[in-house]
Length: 179
Ligand code: 5GP
Ligand code: MG
Ligand code: MG
Image (cartoon, rainbow, N blue to C red; front, top):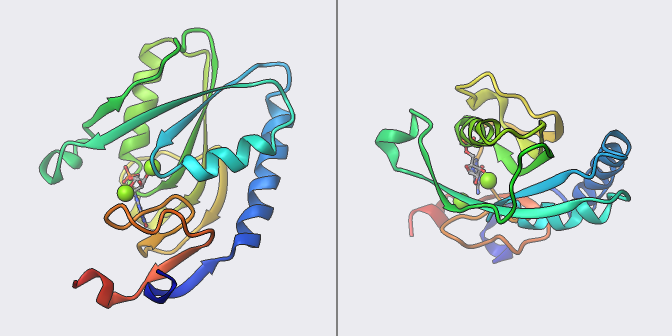
């Protein structure tokens, strides 16, 4: 698995330091608000687990899984909810935890859904951001790293469902894609 990685962009330690920083900030800003922290599966599962361990305030968790309808409808931002939340969001302060914001379409859709369900506030925490690829005006409220326009894997992020368990984030060798 390590042999498939061309370059490590963020080491395990780089990521842990950043996640700690984000967790401390969120703890400060959401103190007394009992936020509902929502993990967008599957990519954000490791980030979510590490982030909430660095949050020192009372909070609740839930999980949501979404998938794109396919290439042709992707640009319209239509995504399908594959697994919905277990708890209502009405009147809650929501923190959406995302692995990476690319076009921003997935998140704009999710925010729209949660707004229609009358969430009290919606905040986005994303570990990675690819601003060059954005097709919406969406910005993360809490952002880990801005990265160049490259396809990255590791720390929850996959290529064909693999590499999610790497503790760091890197770029794959081109030959991996051609297999
Ligand atoms: P968006 O709707 O913002 O275009 O897409 C966001 C989703 O696409 C992310 O949550 C992530 O699952 C996937 N994605 C975007 N960029 C990358 C990347 O560089 N690597 C991987 N593995 N997934 C990505
Ligand atoms: Mg994601
Ligand atoms: Mg994926």
